[in-house]
Length: 180
Image 1 (cartoon, rainbow, N blue to C red):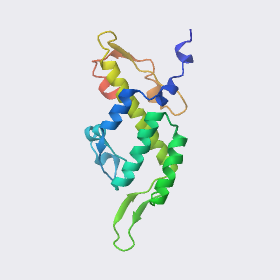
Image 2 (image 1 turned 180 degrees about the vertical axis):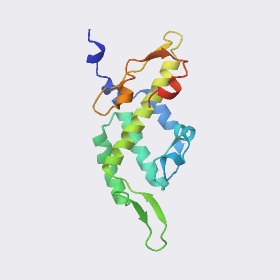
Image 3 (image 1 turned 30 degrees about the vertical axis):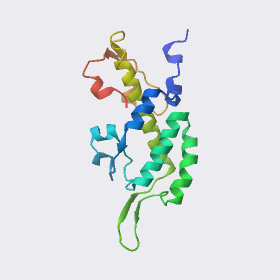
Image 4 (image 1 turned 135 degrees about the horizontal axis):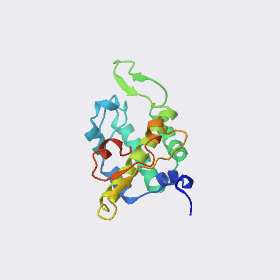
């Protein structure tokens, strides 16, 4: 039997659990220039990408994320499908786009690195929302939860320190440390 440190939980992010897909599908849209323009509660219920101030671009990003959840696409697939759409609409590059005639700012343009952040954040959020729902449905049999980190090179030291932490599901600590 493998030990806890030999189990690679990273693969589960690519699985399309029904609850994660349902969570993502229920989200509406919210436009905001900065991520903090959209309150936390609204972020949980609405899909937003900071700086994307065009609903059609936001819808394009969401559609590709939805497809990724449903089919288990990788980031490379997501990027390969989305980059031509963003390029055609003038949304690749850095900085704000200003209309030459009116001076109107059209929001932040996107870079491949930023798309990686958008993809990772949304896949993990949807997965964890689905996982939370599954855990809550099972608290009578499993009232204690354990925080398990992926423990790869991207984990923050403060998050790595929480790996293996166990508390009851109703402990207030989960309000601040339940990922993400």
